[in-house]
Image 1 (tube, rainbow, N blue to C red):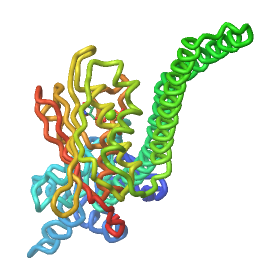
Image 2: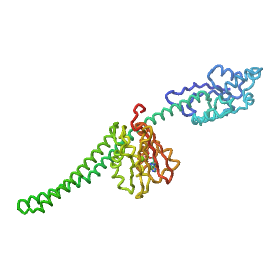
Image 3: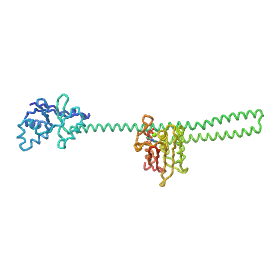
Image 4: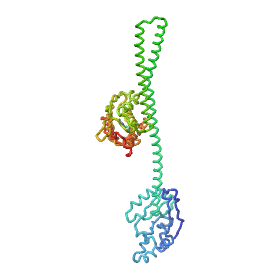
Length: 424
Ligand SMILES: Nc1ncnc2c1ncn2[C@@H]1O[C@H](COP(=O)(O)OP(=O)(O)OP(=O)(O)O)[C@@H](O)[C@H]1O
Ligand SMILES: [Mg+2]
């Protein structure tokens, strides 16, 4: 008979126990020839001992769980029968081979195997085998506690990852905003270039005209027809100068407004149709590179009292998506924007393109953050997520998508003509 009592190992609470070998284990082993009262004495002397390993000349013979042993001893005549007989008899009677797990097995796997046992055996201790041939006993509550620790640790890590993702997302939202402002600035430069070029050309032509006129006057060669010609050309130059200077000023004004709206998120009263035109003008440099035409139908009279910045970002995202996703390179297509006021004073804005549409499996996911079919090709998958948040959060409205492969997209955006800020 040999009895080995090894101090019970307590896991360090700060570090989650992940493998069975790091659980609190007991290494009490008795020979198979010891009588039952020896086992009883061992259990009484070690109240937290879940079970003893029984060995037969160094080889594993079985495991006697505390609960089972005690129930044998409470049977009628149990103590008389079992106290004096060799413990191997009891083992033969039990017919319950223990669940064996390796010391290097993960606690979650061990718990899964343990919980798969028949109901009346779920809480039996486990026999742990070490690579060096040692055996130990693990108690189920300790195993379950370790699994709970691992889960808690994983939850903590998931929470941290989520936090990190949220920070990345808000950073990306910010850079997305900056990118659309960058495109806007490029748009200003491009659009204003034409009228400013005409102003410069006309001014220089007018300077030549005036110089020639002055020469003719000094030399006294001025005829009536020269005078008429000069007046006519001067009037034309003045008309061109005024027209193009006004056009440039208007463009700058509307770009200024769109960019201020995009950055300031201010609420104001604005004519919807003109605003849509202004936003689309800011996108002409991108649209002009394609064969795509844009048609807008919006009653002149609709006046909104809401957040134009949100509206301009929404339209920009939808147009950029049509340009990027809907059509083949160089292919023709049409984007339509219609807006009207519904009964109840809500604006009903419908944005459609007649491009390739969206696959059935993808359509429900397009508003999810980071969903893109252009990963690695410039898509971050935030455009429609931002659009959804702007429609719902800022305009207090709703957006729905109707699409099918080959049938283009149709976004129905509804929002109160006068923003109801209390709802936000
Ligand atoms: N007009 C459209 N036609 C076809 N597919 C579209 C259209 N608009 C969006 N999609 C699909 O929906 C996906 C999600 O669009 P979203 O604007 O959110 O992301 P993205 O355009 O890929 O990237 P990001 O807008 O961040 O640059 C796109 O990757 C594309 O597959
Ligand atoms: Mg996009």
